[in-house]
Length: 112
Image (cartoon, rainbow, N blue to C red; front, side, top):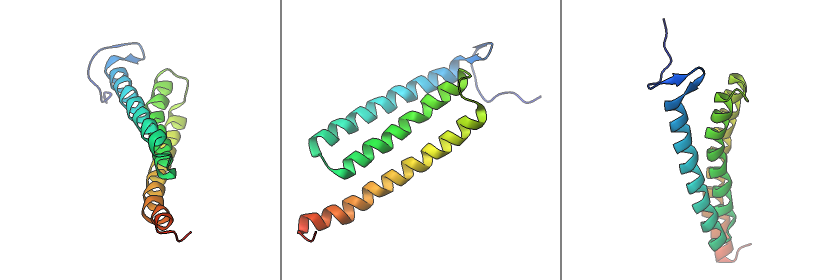
């Protein structure tokens, strides 16, 4: 018999250990996203905005998992959304790095 990969107790479909990890992940993601918003407000740069949106995508992952554990999102949809959010996160971080290294550099040098 295959057992689920978690420890701790559960009541019916509720798994306390998974819920705790998702709660901590959500709170940490929200704090990180909040700090990114503060940094963006100070800098007002497009690259900082891209980082904020990337971190918002990262924050959405545990929220989708919570929706799945509450049977509001199917397992297939949960899997698809999480992979899509991973792709969005990576694309936005790469865009922020590219923008910072090329576009902002040219703006500073007065080329554009």
